Every structure is written in C-alpha cells, then in structure tokens.
Image (cartoon, rainbow, N blue to C red; front, side, top):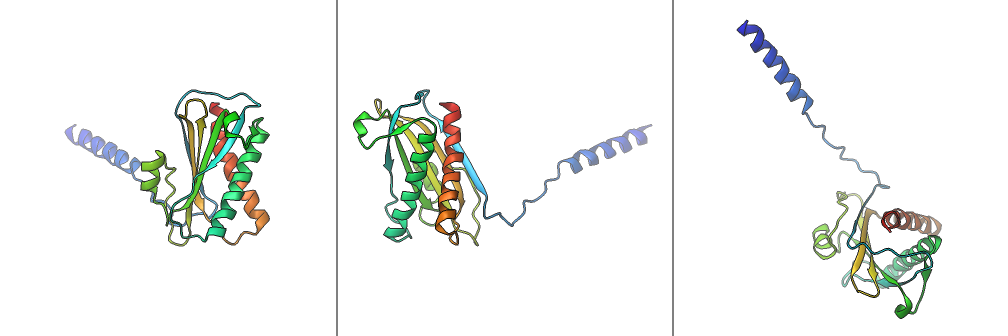
Length: 188
C-alpha cells in the first residue's frame, strides 16, 4: 500500500514538474516587432473639436545628423497631427488657445537607454535589444493646458527600418502613431 502511494506521489510530482518547464524564447527577433505601453495619469477628457498644440522634445545628444533628426521629427509631427485631426481634434499654432499640448520625442537606444527613458518618462515598453538591429523609441504625452499636468503618456519601441523609401517611412510612422494614440482615445 505504501509502495502504491509513493509511486502515485512520484508520478504526480513528475507531472507537476514537467508542467512547469519553460520554453526559451527564440533569439531571432522580427524587424517589424513593436512594443507599446501607456498610462493614464489623471482623468481629464477632451471633446471632439478641442484644440491641441505640438511640443516636440529633442534629445540633447544624438548619433543622428541634425537633418536626419529634423526629418524624423517632421514625419512624426505630421503623423500625430493627422491622427488627432482624424479623431476630431484641431491643431493650433497658438498655444494659448490649446486645450492640451502634445509633447513627443524620438530616440535610438544607442542615444537614450531604456533605464533613462523609465527614469525620465516613467514607462518603457520593454522591447528587448537585438545586436543586428537598431532599436528606437517613440515617446508621446498629453499635457492639460490649463493645469500643466500630464494627462496621458504613451511609448512605442521598435527597430529602425533604414532601408525603407520615403513612402514606406510615412506609412510606418503613421501606423506607429496610430497604434500608440489608440490607447489614448480608448481612455479619453
């Protein structure tokens, strides 16, 4: 009888242990992989027709040339304006008439680490690095114009597509912005 109980316990233990085995992740990462994270800081909402202004934030030191940085920021600025406009918000150059400000920044992992992003911005999507690809981050936040407080923050991390042509860059940027901003719209 003791032998049967011991045998049953041994069998049960081996089944439990085998059920807890973890499968290692694939070392190969997809170049199109994108990690997104966001957080709602305060419960302020904006109605359609509300005006917003853009407030780009630049990395102090970057491995990109000034004209490359300007081109990337213009792509993202255009995509942000188009995305917010398509959701009923209106862009304004006049910051005093804006209901909210949209701050954003773009950085390569070689210029700004995940640790630094987390310290300064408070969230990091956590996309693992890959030595064969250049990881980059897109950070965006909504700040209430009347209180000066952050309402929402979002971040996306992916890999640079340096071989894309201009049309592909525009399309990919619009897709990234749309996917991050979707998280703002669902909580607005």
